[in-house]
Amino acid sequence: MMRRAGRLLVASLSLAALLAGCSGATDLYTGLNEKDANEITAELDRHGVDASKVPGGKQLFAVRVPQDRFASAVAILQAAGLPRSSFTRMGDVFKKDGMISTPTEERARFLSALAQELESTLSQIDGVVLARVHPVLPERVVPGEPVLPSSCSILIKHVAGWNTAAYEPRIRKLVVTSIPGLADAPEKVAVVFVPAETIAATAAATTAGRDAGGGKNTLVGWVTGLLAVVLGVGAPLGWLLWQRRRSAVSTASAGEDPLGLSDADPLTGAATP
Image (cartoon, rainbow, N blue to C red; front, top):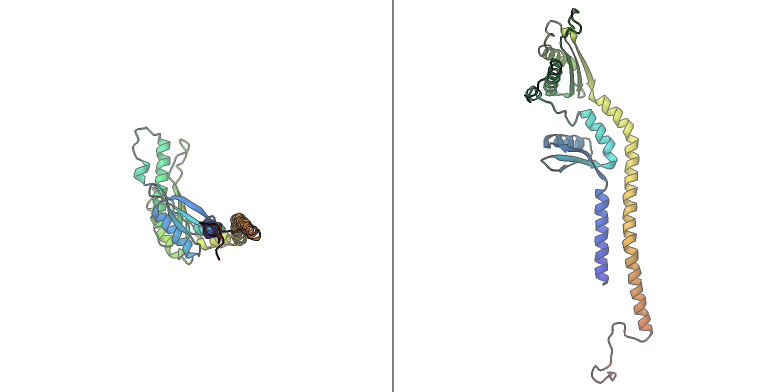
């Protein structure tokens, strides 16, 4: 009985430790494809965050991180531009669906598709973390008024040490030759560069204190929960063993055999010498 009770106590403690270790993880992103999940996990591991990729249904994945590193993980991924934006191809935007579209709807869909195509192309350049393109096509707002010229605004978030002076003319040339009406007005293209490390440093500074306090609170919570389980299992078990020991001692002091054995002859009842 005591051996069985000891095994039960060990199993309970092991289960409590396992539950305590698992309770500190939380999902950072869900519904990711494998490529995005791998990129996120690799980026977090590179910054010292213990991230794990958890498979889900329909070939999708989730990325899980410790609760006390959640804020840091969000800041790291924002600075790295992860998960990457999903772009819609122009062929998908203008897919025939059997409905008639107005000229305004067609124009809006064309602008959206054009912007996404350019963003996808710019994102392929090494060192570009995030690209946003806002094109404006020629349009006559009021009949008889001059046509508004084409223009384009571009935002590039890049890694540290990126040579913006070398890439700016190439980006301008790419955009000017891709948007109608800009070939004769390259000055209508505005390019803004933002270094990613500035955003990362600001986010890390604002979350450092929160992460430090969160780690201590999580550790205290685990220890408290584990002690509660130990006391909850050990106290009843100790009380039961104490009662059995007390009963055995009382029986022995009364002159009875606590194990139910006797020195008498089992056939005659006489005491054996």
